[in-house]
Amino acid sequence: MGVIHGKINFENVESPYELFRNHCKKHNVQINDDEPKLRLIDTVVIPELKVYLENGTELNGWGGAITGMDNEEYEIQFGGITSELMQTEFKHHYDEYFGAE
Image 1 (tube, rainbow, N blue to C red):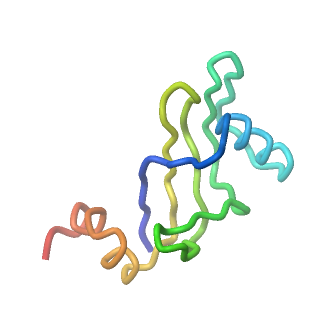
Image 2 (cartoon, rainbow, N blue to C red):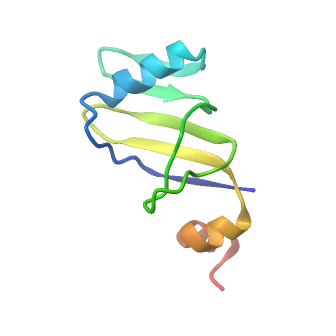
Image 3 (cartoon, rainbow, N blue to C red):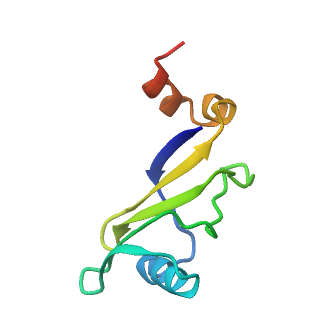
């Protein structure tokens, strides 16, 4: 099982900070760092979080942890990715870890 990471692209979300903070509070997900003045958040893995590939397929795994600030970007680290999915959808991550084939 592998881990992928990358920038999150939002559509129609005014404040990702509020989105993630409210979600974590609602589902009792631990927040490692929460700085409201900076609008910065760092979470543990959020099991209820749904992540979709560009083709619309839901990404399956253990879940994703989020880090970021509203005036910068947000990053996700998503774990539990199968090696087959890593090789097809996230080849750059696979090659970085295992070496290019």
